[in-house]
Length: 255
Image (cartoon, rainbow, N blue to C red):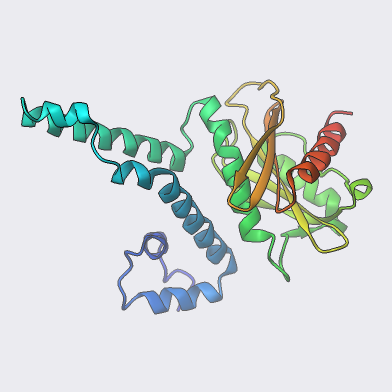
């Protein structure tokens, strides 16, 4: 296969279960030699799973009694109600995928995206990061340029975690260009935390928000907005441990 023999629509079809059975083995074989695209496919699959978990119950829920009563008077009204419901659901899903939610709702996507990125990259043994900690200066300069603001990875040795490095990701940043930074840390027992940083300025200087906690599956996330950036610390640790480290991160970012 050539590098251009697999199209984006085929990768999406693989994630959605719509790729032709005759083509699937070739695409899967191609992904084994293209780790970046394979990681992106895993992110899409995880997003699909979260969307199903969030909205399948809406699709299978029975129609409200008021709509059923309306059928006694007008089949046309029922058809209109069903159409509007599908349009509304489609709009919500579309906004989640394209990152076009209002600011408050956009912030709500931050922990989900951070958890997905943590789930994809934290188990990596050979390639957990794109640029390792020995090149911290280059890493900070590169990610700062891509996110459009000064970034530096916090040092968490006092909390028992060593910086492994970081990588550039894509996401639904409010005021950026879709670029997202992820810094990865590891303790002496091999447990890993990731700090996910996204530009949430929406074209202007953002304010600040208090810490919020979310649990996405077995991954806990503390997240907050500070200036133009949204931060999310993710890990499989207990809530108290994540809060302890998140507090240290915040203090380093705001000396």
